[in-house]
Image 1 (cartoon, rainbow, N blue to C red):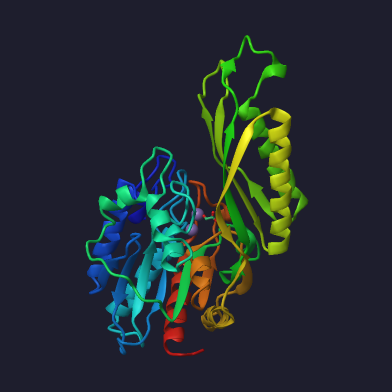
Image 2 (tube, rainbow, N blue to C red; image 1 turned 120 degrees about the vertical axis):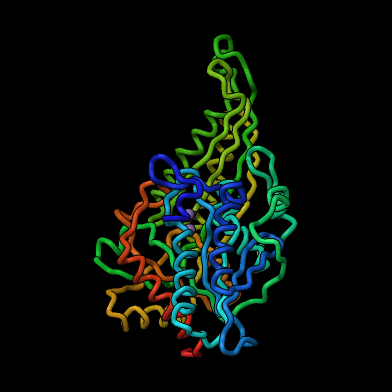
Length: 395
Ligand code: GLV
Ligand code: MN
Ligand code: MN
């Protein structure tokens, strides 16, 4: 709740854009909390923060845990922040009880998981796992032309710089962001993996014209073309269950009531657990874009800014999460993640597991996001047991 004060909105949510001033303040608070436990905190070149908690064998590879602190513009208190705070709670519990974990623990705050200010999502973890070039990430600009590099020059919240070596395993706690656990009265979801997704940015080039004097047949209206693409995306999503297709952002230029829109910037994203089905969705999407372009006389540029195949998680980590939940008597089930997470990026290079807890009504990316203290505490417990189990070499 203290963290949720950074960027708090009147409606009870959080607006904490990646690398904004409010995000930097949240990061500094995180660093202070970790340093109070004796952790050494470092930032890497993309601003990911790593807090190291010493282990009995401090030369052993670390077990890493964490999530992100940036939010959607009308985000909730829990998406991302919970996973970071759950990791902090693990470290506080070990510290308060004088327990040294078998291996070092690294608690990480990934930079810009949401991708809502700077595309793509999972930026920090994709750079860390060498799936996105650092230079590409640094030069990415937000809608006002401010780059990631420029924001990082204002400070990532921590002065010490380091490149942190790959851990033995990665665990991330997160609210489910969907309705399944709550509906089935399960406290813990042992995440088996995440569905694949791809993101596109489109630029539609029409022709500005007077709204009163330009006959309908003589227009090249970029917004009408964008609207047809939005409708096509909705159809494509419905035709490929359980796939999802969304356009979440449109920027219309010049955005004046009596000017036929000259250009539109828009986003599109496609998700499906089956990569082949997602491929068919992409083919339909590209066909729709071509048809709209021809019909409307609007030139359309399509830029794919993210492609992540479905990500199966490590059977060892999934089992550890299940067993940790069962040992504490928490009702649990296997579950697939519809959302993207930094764990998806990490799963490509190290054994990875995720722990889901229920959230009210399955609501997320919404200021009303909510979860019970009991479920959140259970997730912390399972995270703690899981990182210690992995560190002890239960695999
Ligand atoms: C992350 O928030 C996502 O878009 O799944
Ligand atoms: Mn998240
Ligand atoms: Mn999110």
